[in-house]
Length: 193
Image (tube, rainbow, N blue to C red; front, side):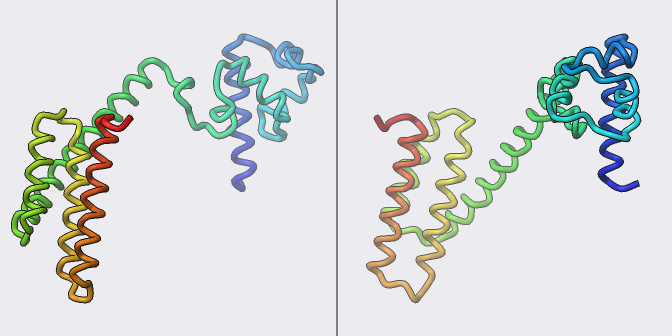
């Protein structure tokens, strides 16, 4: 069976499920549409022989209290989930965010070690110290800011080791990075009007 016919069958089974949950016969279900659909048409939908037009699909989704996306693809949106499914989805999302946060914290530790082993000049060291002091009093959720700052400092170190860059270009690059970091922090903490 090809993909298109398989999709029709799946749509048909969801239509049949809706009709059965409503406790309607095929004839009664067909009467819900304008113009009404005959019971043989409803039967063709349910068997996956044909698919209702978009207007009728919308009406079926409305009758079943489901989204059009779920009716036509089987993919659920938040409104299609039961309370238990919502709780499970939120739990999974929370666990994913926690894992990402932990991964980010590990990245920060590794990158910070890399920076400490690098040859930072006085301006970079002072700036890094100030940023870390600022973040020390911030929320733990601001770990993303620290990761971004470390990435910027690392790119600065990589540029410093590139012998093809002049001292003036390096100075411009570092000043640009520092401005980007300041702008990022000010924006993040709503210090800009």
